[in-house]
Image (tube, rainbow over all chains, first blue to last red; front, side, top):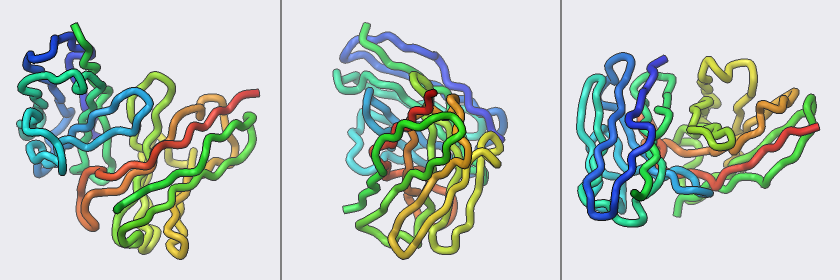
Length: 108
Length: 121
């Protein structure tokens, strides 16, 4: 099973700043089968990015994903108030999917 | 419109059995994998397993193999997650979600609203 480690655990930033979230895999994620999800309190997760860098339907272009192999990054170019949430990466390249432990993005 | 509607919250005692459901609509239910995800109170997402309703092909995370059973009834477009003997540690929110593509490997693009399961004596 591929283990995903996200960093940092908590990121404190202000609206308008740039956020960079990291996801590292214990082994290479085939074909960049890496997704990012956003979860707000009391809500189900929402798909943001898939295939490491493709935005899901309706996701603003301030969200971008990059990376390959074992190192992946989610970047939010200019934080809006509604972006403060928990973010999870997920690999779906193996028959057994797995999630990272999450990064909480909080208002500074 | 694609929708996944889950059954309501449950309160159970340790040792009891439980089956929760996830009804899909707005798409061909038999053509997309449905996954189950656990979220314990205040914790992260855990991938439990997945089922292809078309032929009931099922895969489990090693952490959940033998602990739960995933099934589907394609005649009523519903997937299920069941326990034969609940433990207090099964207390969590459980989400079902659909894979984005009908075949191959893909992320989860549509999610149910979640079913809260509370196990307490």
